[in-house]
Length: 129
Image (tube, rainbow, N blue to C red):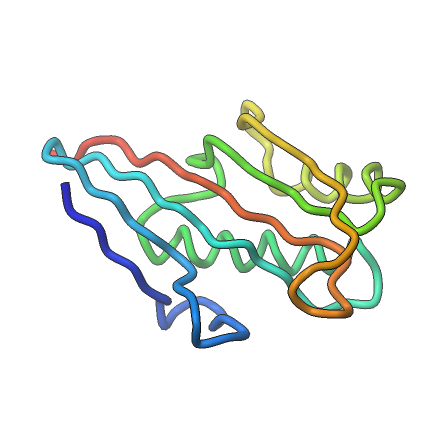
């Protein structure tokens, strides 16, 4: 097993230098798991922030040869659970295949004061031959 941590140059860079956006865990058969750190995005509305986050996650996955369809688990943190329908509508725009396992949690505060939402994800890549 090989573990690589990093911030792909082709994706938006993290807001802080104190964490890696992606941990890639490669197995001997060539399969891999990608652990995407919690992502936030700018925007005045929850929908704008949600779209920005999914676009960043898509770019992080693409940098590793994956797509949003490879996500197997997603964790969402909302500062107000009343925004769940608005977030769910955006999520359905981006996650169009079988839904991944999921957890949504209300958190009173997130990393950035204006953040209304933060999303982290895990993706699975099949073996390469």
